[in-house]
Figure 1 (cartoon, rainbow, N blue to C red):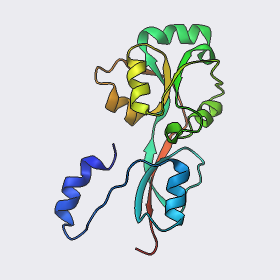
Figure 2: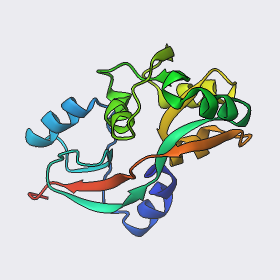
Figure 3: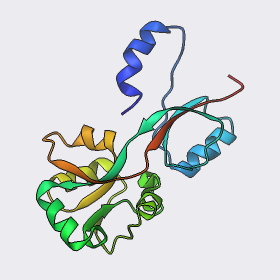
Figure 4: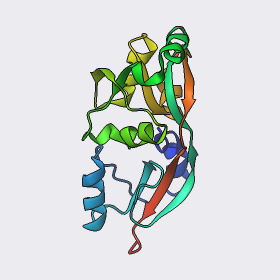
Length: 168
């Protein structure tokens, strides 16, 4: 979502560079690949306080709990912790600190109605009114084409970070 839109102009500016893109990796696998010298450059979205190998902060990404407007009033009346939540599995690569982010907000979801390792799936399910999702704003904007989701509680911003292997 962050890098791909810039690739064509980057290739025009630097035609002598050969780029190879790797498939999505779990956080643990990416850290292992960086430590093993298999990754020269990586752009990662990191939860607040997440330890990443030597990285440069590119900017902040807002995050929070999102749901449809018609569900928002019920959430506020019943308490957000009682909301139907759509979450990644706890150990999935898509977790991105979701559970820590909710914990920092003082939210321990009592009712998880669906899980998916894919954030786009979770956002689309939230768009259909299935529940609330904790997500970074850029993912919500990308996958909520009809703009039906509203942020009902802001979280601590995540960071976009750039890793460049010092040997490069």
